[in-house]
Amino acid sequence: MIIESLVSKVAKGDDLPIQMVSPLVNEIPRDDLLNYISINDPVDLFTARKSNDVLMFPIEQYKLLQMWNMHQDILGKSILILTDIPSVDYDAEFAEASSRGSKVAYHALIGDLAEASRRAEMVGDATVLDKEQKAITKKSGDVRRMEDTDFDQSED
Image (cartoon, rainbow, N blue to C red; front, side, top):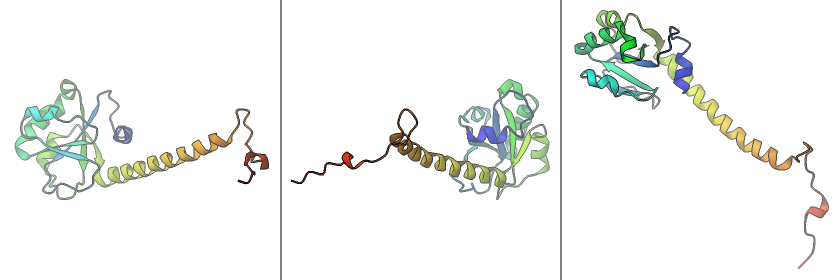
């Protein structure tokens, strides 16, 4: 959900869902936010189920990426190229195979995801405050006040 809203800014405006793609990475980044899937044959294109899945294409599969790039409507997903991933070699062949895709920078996406996650946690904390606020507020909107009579002052 968060990823869709972030990448919708760079989408070309078509109504197809977006799928992130990249060249095959030499070392998978340890960001704990994205899931990296290697594409070894055409069936692997359908393994991506979540919005945080990144399909990684080795050089041998650039023709498959190019076919998808030219006919995105057939597969029902638009290509979003994840650029500047550490330890990835972006070459001219990948650029040509993915030429029609929109682009988003890895570090910018990870930063936005981390910020969105932090804000979601803050909203979760605010709900505790909202519960407390609701507990001390009367139906009329007035704040309940503690009275001396609210406490049992009898001695045992």
